[in-house]
Length: 468
Ligand SMILES: O=C(O)c1cnc2c(S(=O)(=O)O)cccc2c1O
Image 1 (cartoon, rainbow, N blue to C red):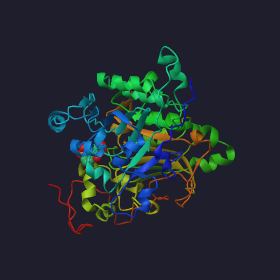
Image 2: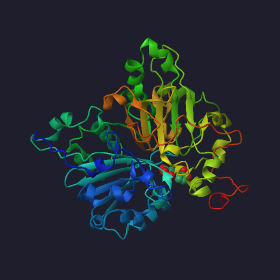
Image 3: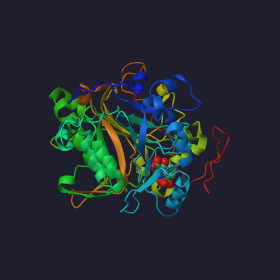
Image 4: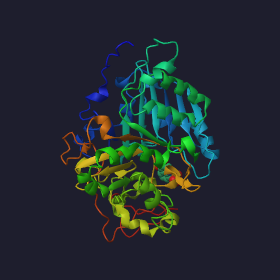
């Protein structure tokens, strides 16, 4: 095929954006230098300097349509826009009302067959004259999600159109996908919507060369998965893709001892009902997933869970209001006090985002000294069975309720055996969004719970929190 000239992509101009292309959102109220490196606003992502837009698709959970349209450059506001959502009943009615002034907006409602499932996926397809760019992130399409929070963004290169040298794309698909099977897995995910409007985008993705993608897709879709589909989604997919880290690279005897306890860190903005103790799901299933498949040697990684304490929320830039996006309910929390011993505070001094309340979700594994990163996942998935799936039928079936998507960074796709985590922010270390090692809750700390009042101490805006 013709040699695709590497088009200059302004995203590359943002220092340190390569090779990971993993950004945080800009934060109002912190020094500019912390927004210059590795941070993007929605307006920047959609700007004309990143490509000449033909049409786009926005997958999300919450939408403020007028605000969203304003984030597009004025010359792109009339372009066709597909909104992929999970809204029903009155939320659907209000979404339709919000979209009615915009004739070029189409709505695609994700099939939500399972109760308590949600369409959490946050993703953009940006079709330019030059090719297609894919963005996978953690922010709702509402202003407060892009203002003073810590959110994650993976932004793809512009994938060029496959020059139509063959009469169909099937023959070129093989060599137009990446060794991380990015295109295959994205199409597998999209296929589960069985939506006519997404057919156009699936065909478009087929017609673009994604061989330069260096991340894996880790997604969830509602359903019960067995047989050939067993490891396609949720926590089993994560295990299947990260397993190499434990087999080839670190199984060497000298490393095995050291490796077995290498900690796994989960960081999220909500927590589901996980059962009456850790053995119900957290240790038995979720952690086991992230451990060795073959339990030939008993490996016991430490599990550290980062979720904001009440004090983290009270002292955040938004104050208690930040807690509106941390919907951990009393009803769930009161049934799992055992979880509190796993909890660590939200701390991000090195990115100056300790006070930018997290809505990002990330999972990673590091060495005991927190100097080497084994893998890193940024995703829409919180710590819940609905998002990650729970095993049924004697561990032969994985039951998932929600749509989720994230991207996984593996050292082997960046030709190294582990990513460096150095504490100075200007080095080529992996741009982790928070401080490592994580900071334990203090004795007086409690996890933020959204539906109880906090009146004894006022927040950074001198307010109290009284959920109605
Ligand atoms: O980003 C999301 O996908 C997401 C999902 N749900 C949320 C809820 S709630 O629907 O669970 O009550 C309440 C506040 C914020 C939320 C949120 O940011």
